[in-house]
Image 1 (cartoon, rainbow, N blue to C red):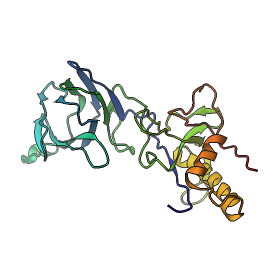
Image 2 (cartoon, rainbow, N blue to C red):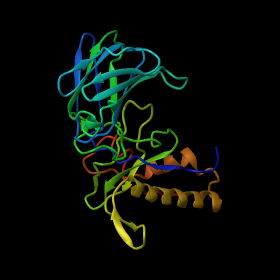
Image 3 (tube, rainbow, N blue to C red):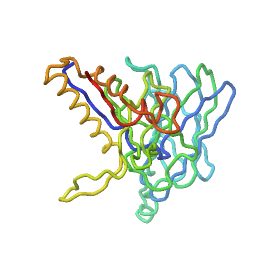
Length: 294
């Protein structure tokens, strides 16, 4: 609404095995394997699909016990498998989207025996399975997510992850300038940088900037080298500020903000070696910023 530009990092989940997905066809059964590492006190999974697609969902623990099909009902469902209690929530469409979320919470089963409390303080580790059985399928695409932010133990991950769509909120917002990271030394995409998805109604990211081994101030004094899209985004923020100064402050273009500013940044982005088609899910319209205004 105001004369501003918001620059946001794409997140650093591009190389983490936290996201997977697929497409379920009529009459098909698919199994998704999820590794749960030792000493995991809790866990949750989000499964997103089109509301009009109907499918049965089963969960199987590492010892082969299975529950399901889960019931599509309002409120929490409770299931028990081994040392793990499952809380299942079926969502409904909202006024702003037509998709459905099925949320699965993995919790340690409540234990009253004092001798067993210490032994049962973690959910069952090993290979869990999420089994999807097609019902009335119209589209069939589905997406699964684990929590990000380095909150999970090593070994807790999908066995067949998918990097596509690993951008994080708020880089998903339509009108922000979403920034990925590349390695300026190698002139190559940084694999940790979150990626866009063809399933978004608009392409992301908008562009990339240097985000590997960036020299920056360190907490407590001095400098250190850091990697991440939190360190690539300030390069674009600075470019946006310079453009807005040239346009708004110096009176060359009082409307140089928002989507207009984003358009200039996209146009000035350079291609990366090896990427032929733009926009790209990894780098958007390209790297760095070259702007020539007259």
